[in-house]
Image (cartoon, rainbow, N blue to C red; front, side, top):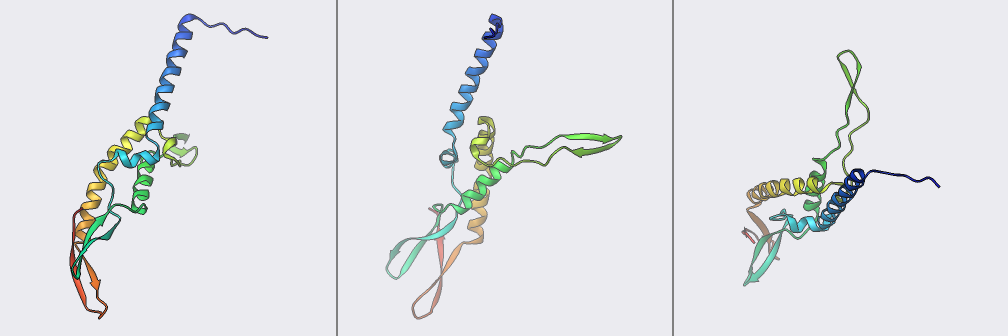
Length: 157
C-alpha cells in the first residue's frame, strides 16, 4: 500500500475546488431542460387555438402550449455553445482543424454559466419571434358548414 502525502495548502486547494464543483453541479440541476421553460420570460407561440365560442363566432388566441417551436429554440440555445475545435498550423500560413465541432446534445451538458447565457438569449429571441408570428398571422379563416368563409382576428392571450 502506497501512502500519498500532500501539503496542507494542496489539501485546502483541493477541498475548495471540490466545493466549487459541488456548487456548480447543484446549480446545473436547477436548470434542467424541463426547468428552462420556467426560466424564460415568455414561451414561443406555436399555433392559434379557439379560446371561447360566444354565439356563432368563435374567438381565437395565440397559443404557447405546443412543444415543437420550443424545441427549436432549445436546440438553438444549445447550438450557440458549439464546442469550437482549435486550429493547428500544418505548414507555414496554413491552418487545419483537429476535429469537427460538437453541438451539446443535452442541456445538462452545458455548464451553469452556459445555461444562464442560453436563457438570456431565449429571453431576447422569443419576443422577437412572437412579434413576427403575430404579424404573419393576425387573423384566421373559419369555414362554416355551408362553406361560407370568414376571417376573424386573433386576440393576444
